[in-house]
Image (cartoon, rainbow, N blue to C red; front, side, top):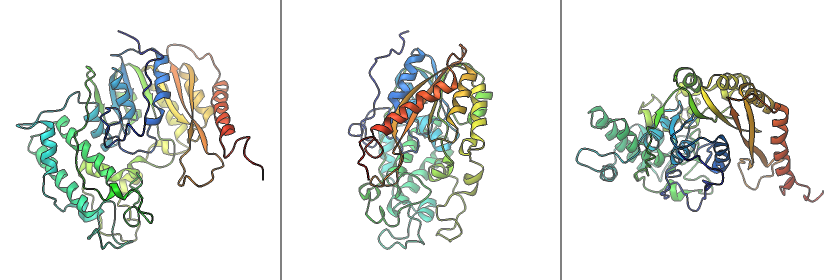
Length: 425
């Protein structure tokens, strides 16, 4: 089997070629907008994968899979891919793109015909329309109506999701068929949402005060078939807490990619609408904003029970150290940022405690609410720590930290807002 060679064509995101709604590229097709999405960091991750020397057919675990972009990258490289995440929406998206190697067939219909059938369903008001949409798309009441979706699209979501639930209840859909129909709906829930990507809030008015992205928010929700890829492997999808996966999944893996949350915001709250569409749980909510902290319509258990230890600065370090110590793998790759909850030195120490650790670093433009707003630190360093668990550490944690921080300093020095060429006051 050929190794995944250094110098092979780099998988690189191009916003002009890889628009999620229209691209036919498997890695980027209908990729949901996602905080921490690694689509722009695939070249960095690819460098770490190439350095490990794993070959097509070897196992690759994406432990915090999220949008699934890294798992898709791994699948496209020919690795036997296991995508894990404890969020229900992630499980369904990955069950389609990672779990299925070919478009499923349906009784009497092709995949494309089944998508067309769902698109042709008459709109129907249900839980989404009643709780997440205004009564009138033109005469909405800001502060009273939830405005996650236009009513016309809420009715499309309700009609399609009810049809899927009915078909599954009748035994007409297996898990793969169901996921291949639900994943495009989850993508469209993102594409047509009246948000900037997160579901903890929505714009006041369609697209906010400046009408941002009205072209997508006001478009008609229409499903498109997922672009699938056959890598010839028996790929898997799981929905487990990462610690439980490491403890109970019971195998040794060739490569485990670890990309835990960096900050205090739980994904279950950020993407609670996607979880409700995936589970079709129809949480009991007031139909309108009641002024009791219910504007975002987040289920109370998504706020508390779904919080990860990685969302806590106090708990994250111990959680990651325990995870790295217990993951059954030859190679472990940890993605993280110099802005994360876990101190850089603690992260390097956890890596070196498990094996020989090296770093791969990429300067990265930090997120800011407004591109025009000045930032005292416009850049940070995104990095991957690659751990060879078969060899003892040969580099100190302090030296690893200095390598990463030097890259960050270099990026800040060359940035026009913070660099040496910035005009003095």
